[in-house]
Image (tube, rainbow, N blue to C red; front, side, top):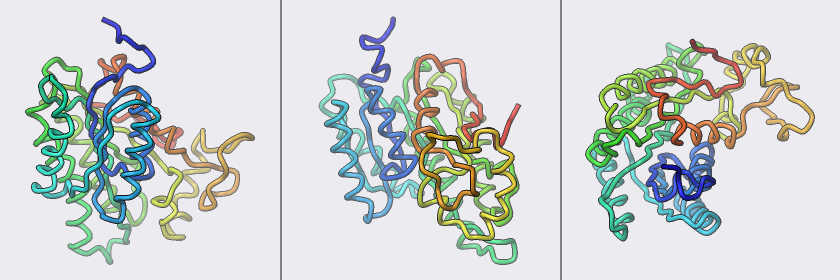
Length: 284
């Protein structure tokens, strides 16, 4: 049966978006809100509280949805439990049974270092946020997922899982791990939801801009050979860290792919890594 409003295909669905106060996460939250989804905007640092509050307020007003925000470290069992309990309370006014329809595992950190300089602390912290966090969240959310395969889990990966960029032994490893978990969860959760990953390349914003000059120089050849990264008249203003004549993705472009995968028309896609990187990586 088609949705009552085709322009809002996610009407009244509940979506949890981690790392959603800024960047790709905020763009994904807005995309889902525009499709009618109610939101739980998650963030980790207290410094992001104002950003998350402003985003939730704006999306609720502009798209006539319910949007709440919660500070919780999903890399810990306590943080995940806090997030789930908050989501329950936020949805308590609904008469229907509590259900988590969409999970976007977007929160992530990168701490690049060449092999001799990698520390145990860097490894443990990056894997805790990028790998353990999504695992704990999906584990805690599983009892509340739909029972009719209508749910959606989207894990934000990276081209770093495939390209072998210098200095990304740890970060690239975490993204390879999230892609492996995507395939496993697509089987284990087949009666609940589809599970897919999206692997952006360079995306506008502070996370990519924070890379070292050495890393940016190393990746330049990849960028220049990426079909859609050649800038054209009318493109968004060029990011100063991108090579001349090229552009990275906008956060809205990545969010659009995620939003597509959350829709009803994507019900036959699961266990996949969807390449949203302009052709930097082409997987079969």
